[in-house]
Structures are given as structure tokens and as C-alpha cells.
Image (tube, rainbow, N blue to C red):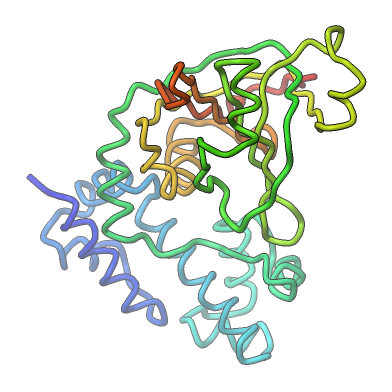
Length: 285
């Protein structure tokens, strides 16, 4: 038997030894599991193998060290236990998909995130939410009419009593929120409703913006009416659920829908993440 605290204990041990060269056998011994059993449980709980997580955290912190100390790649590599710049480069490519020199630009413009340390709160959420009924669904193209806003969160809270929500909900009981990243480490959002362009007036075009969502395959995640899960959803989806289930994020946006009732309260919310299978080379339009 094991619990989430056992996996978090292993994570804390790895975090305390990022500048060393731990083996996964040593980490497994520390938490009292065989290497095989520990590797399986760690992957089930985090979406990473222990080796991938440890490597990803080491290169992430080495790159942050390189930026903070304005040092050379070789200095950062040695500081975090890599035997040579070549080994460090291979580890970066394996963990992050880019070389240290390619990552330098994102370090300079503050957009680099790398592999963040997993918290106990995240692990608990991942374990609980992974049993939720997530389905794959293909939807036709749709036009959304609404208003833009920006924030520093991918899934920010929304005032369902705001004037724009009240106005839009008079035209449709289904409210859409689109979320996508900008180049400046912030997020754009469009809150709106589905429309038929043939039935719009000139006033609509003057007062609203429009975005076309192409026909696309989605993973659909049910949300509670309170949307309390959303602060943890980004990491859960992109760092855990998609790689674990052999999906790729197909485009840069996510779509959230809320079904409103006559009192303008939420009846149900769904989060749509556009995806494709890793072996699916089809293009979506």
C-alpha cells in the first residue's frame, strides 16, 4: 500500500538533492519501495517517470541558476551535478525539448518555466481528479461573439453577475470563455456566446469581437459549479493528463463552457482542451 504522502516524500528527497546525482534506486530505498514498484507508482501519481522528473527539475534549476548568476552553461552544468556540457545539453533536450542555447531567449524575457516542483496539493488533486469522467469529442467549427480581456492566469475567476455576462446570457444560455497565451507571459480571454454571422446586425459588429474556432477534437473535462478546480487544472492537464494518455495539445487555446439557468447561475461547466493523438498526423481546419 502507498499514499500520496509517500510520493511527495520522494519528491522532497529529490528536490533536496538536485545538485547531486541520485539514482532512482536510492530514492526508492528512501521511501521503502522496490525500484520497479516505485517507478510505477510515481508515474501513476505524477505523469512523470522518476528519472524524467528528476532530470527535468535538475536542468530547470540549472538554467535558473545560469540566469541568476549570469554564468556560462558549463558552470551551471557542473553546479547541478552534470559531468559535461554535452550531458547537460542532452538532458535539456530530453526534459524540455530544447537546448540550453535555445532556452536562453525565454530566460531573458521571463517566459521560461521549465519543470516546476510538484506540491502535495497538486498530487492530491491529480489523484482525485484523474478518476473523473473525461471524454474525447469532435466538434464542428463555431463562431464566438464576445469581449476580450487579459490576465496573468490561464483560467481566471469570472464574475457571472457582470454586465457583459448579463447581456450575453439574454441571447444564449451557453456562455463560452476562450483562453490562450500571449508572447508576454500573460493570457488573453474572450467571453462570449455562439452565433450565426448571417443573423448579426451592424451594431453587433461595432460592439463585439469575433473568433472562429475550427472543427477540432477535444478532451472534455467536467467542472464543479464553483470552478474551484481551475487554479490547478492547467498543470494537471498539460503536465499530467495529456502526456500520460498519449495526447498532444493541438492548438494554443482552451475553451470553457457554462450552462446558465434563468437566475443566471451556473448549472454545469465543461472545459474543452483541443488535442490530437501522438500518432495522428491529420491537420485540422
